[in-house]
Amino acid sequence: MSDTAFLKLDKLSLAYGKTIAVKDLDLDIRKGELLALLGPSGCGKTTTMRSIAGLMTPVGGQIRLDGADITHVAANKRAVGLVFQSYALFPHLTVFENVAFGLRLKGMSGTELEAKVTAGLKSVGLSAFADRKTPELSGGQQQRVALARSMVMEPKVLLLDEPLSNLDARLRLEMRTELQRVQKESGVTMIFVTHDQVEALALADRIVVMKNGAIEQIGTPEDIYNRPVSSFVADFVGFENVFAVRDGKLVTSEGEVALAGALPEVAGLAWRPRTVTLGTGPLQGKVRGVSFAGGTREYVLDSSLGTIKAEVDAAAPAHPLGTEIVFDLPIAAAAKLERFG
Ligand SMILES: Nc1ncnc2c1ncn2[C@@H]1O[C@H](COP(=O)(O)OP(=O)(O)OP(=O)(O)O)[C@@H](O)[C@H]1O
Ligand SMILES: [Mg+2]
Image 1 (cartoon, rainbow, N blue to C red):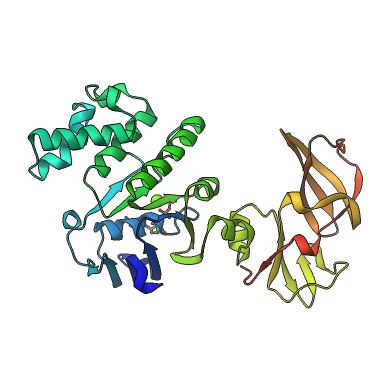
Image 2: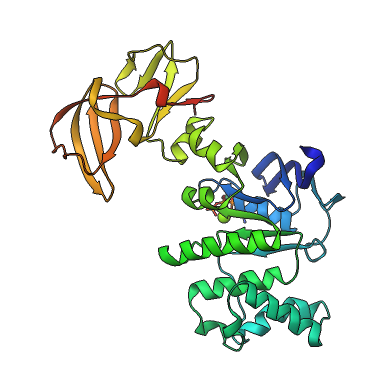
C-alpha cells in the first residue's frame, strides 16, 4: 500500500523533552480518505497531528506528503490545514473576513477572493451569515466558519482535532453529517481526532486506534467494531465482557472457568452485552443491576465468571434485582482477540 500513500508517516517518533509521546509510528493515508485517530486521553493523538501540521519537529522518522519529504518543511509551507477544538475565530471580524483571512495573507484580493470566500461559505451552509460577527453565531455555526476558513486554503490534508467536542449532542450529530458531506464533496484528505468511538465509527473510512503513543489497530469501522485485535480495542469499542484465555479456559476474576464448548486458540475472547443470552444457558448469575435504555434493558449480573453485562430487548419481561438467572456466553458470538492487555 505504500506506493498509494498520499500522506506517509514513517517510523515517526515525537517527544517533549525526555518524554516520548509517540514512538516509531507507521501510517499510510490514501488521497481523499477520511481517517479517524481514536484513543484515550494522552495516547498521542494531538501530538501526531501537531507533527503533521509542522508545529513540532520529530526526534526520528519521516513525514511524506504527495511524494515530497516535508519532515523539515515550515508549517506555513506544507499545505496542511488544522482545525482545533477551540477554533479561535477573530471576534472583531465578520464571518466573511474570518474566512478571507488566510487568503488575504497569501495576497489574494478582489473578485477572486470574493468568489473563493462565497463558495467556502456556501459549502458549509453559511451564505446568509457572511456579515455577522462571529460571537453572534451558535457553536455549530462557529465550527462551520472554522471549517470554511481552512477549506478555502485548499489544503492537501485537513487535520481536525476534536472539532466537535464542545458542541452539544444534537449539534454534534448535525456537524458530523456536515463534515462528512464537505469532505466527500471536496475530496480533501482528512484526519479527524476523537476519543468518542461512536463518532469515529460513524465518520471514518478507516480508524486508527492508538495506545501509549503507538498504533494498536488500523481498520475499517466494521473491522474495529466487530474484530478488535486486542482486549484494549475490545474494551474501547464497548465489548463489556472481555476475558483472557489460558489452557482452554476463560481467566475471570473468580478464577479459570471452562465453557461448554472448546475454546479457540486465542489470547482472549470478548462479548458485547447484547450477545450474552439471558434466560438460557449453562451459566448461573444473579441480577445486581438493571436499567432501562429505551429499546433495550441493560443487566449487570454477579456470576461464577465475576461481573457480566447483558443487554436484551426492552419488550421482554424485566428480571428484577436479586433474580437468579441462567445465561450463556456463546463462543460463536465472541470476538477472538490476538493480544490480551
Ligand atoms: N507540552 C507538553 N509537554 C510535555 N508533555 C506533553 C505536552 N503535551 C503533551 N504531552 C504528553 O504527551 C503525551 C501525548 O499527549 P497528546 O496531547 O498527544 O494526547 P492526546 O491523545 O491528544 O490526548 P487527549 O485526548 O487528552 O487530547 C501525553 O502523555 C502528554 O502528557
Ligand atoms: Mg488531544
